[in-house]
Figure 1 (cartoon, rainbow, N blue to C red):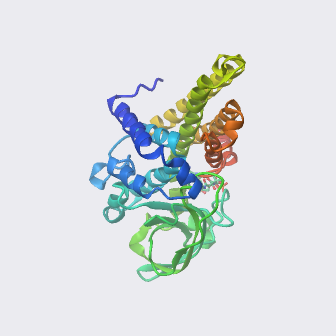
Figure 2 (spheres, rainbow, N blue to C red):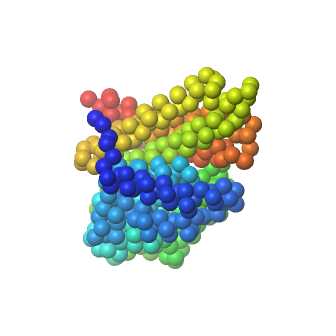
Figure 3 (spheres, protein in one colour):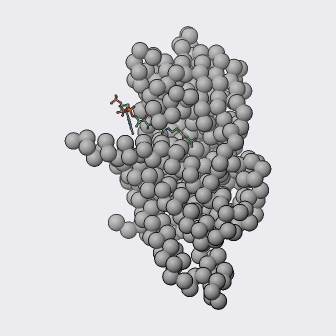
Length: 380
Ligand code: CAA
């Protein structure tokens, strides 16, 4: 299987690369340092059609395939992985989930503005006691006539401060365990809905991460996605696509690390010549490039399977597992090649390392990906 980029893919790549160069590169370090949310940049990404890339045009999206999304995510994350995760959550966890399983009314009311980038979305599955163990949901939604009353707490919610719409998983029948979980669309500003303080993070510092609190929030029944009890499957199937997004984000960080290392090794002189002439450096670059290419192929393969309508959960897990590990390793090697300069903020490879680490944690830790992969291998 080869992955020849067609003319559309090449155009997306060039557009994303140009955007990252013009709109993100100069300000990424400052946003990271000061924990500034990229409001303007996200608005412009929406205007480019990058906030709902896989949603058909009739619902406000760009009508592109998953490979286009992967390519754009890589280019954006190569320069600013915080912008990458904001884009990824909106595209693959919120827009894709709503497009695939939302009602037509929900699509008209919510998806159109989310996919066109006029509104921002968040995905609320994790709780204080339900991270990897996602079935252990304590948030409850009790039916009361034509609405539900929602109570509970969600943790680690990306876009939690700045999102307009939230997809929230909650127990509608706790006696049924994960089969009693349902998903609801919750709007910012609904009475009883609030967020906690912004988490102080190691990396992806210009994206916002918060806890959410629901205190007797009244949710119309029309905001439930699918049937009661469909919520856990909805979350799992949506996360399969999300993992392709995070793999692409990690791919961008890894490639950004390699690009920085190649550039620096040609500029920096030691022992009377550029360090790129030293085999110790050459071998590091060769290993980084090889692993990044393997990671890219895994990610492209998962995207292609998804676009072909085939099972892609195992490949998405493999892509996320391998690409996130590659990103951490590539960032570490880039720092090593930069020496002391890599350890300080003068060059941004230290940001790449801080940003890379989270890709091994969110949307399913590496241990969860191994669980998904091994279960698939052993299922028959
Ligand atoms: N597609 C459809 N259904 C699925 C599925 C999938 N990919 N994976 C699991 N299910 C179904 C199972 O079939 C089962 O249903 P039945 O009982 O009807 O057969 C049900 O879900 C429960 O599955 P398991 O029995 O496998 O449950 P488990 O507790 O043993 O394991 C898990 C589930 C895979 C570990 C899951 O809890 C998981 O993925 N955990 C990680 C959660 C995660 O990724 N969180 C990320 C939060 S979002 C985020 O990070 C966003 C961000 O901010 C960037």
